[in-house]
Image (tube, rainbow, N blue to C red; front, side):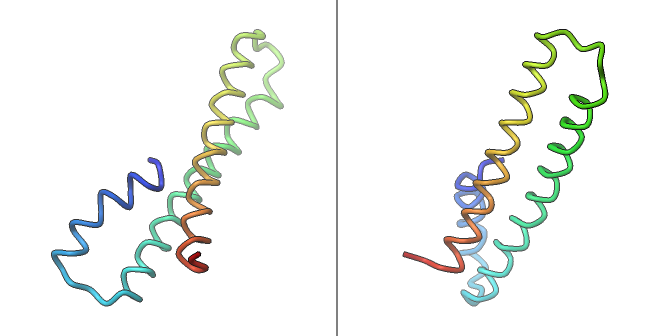
Length: 89
């Protein structure tokens, strides 16, 4: 899930509840941390397959690398949400 689309998804829910801004901040940070852990687990699993499976074809290796790169980008996007929320422009 992309960080910005996640924020867009929860904004209407947050505005309906009328929560204090610090609580909203904490909830967004918590959700990003959960997502980051999931992405890091996937990255580690994919990397482990790449390291330990010697019988992968080059096409399979490329697919695994592409997937690993995608999840790394997602991890970084969620990290940027946390940084932006903690240190706004």
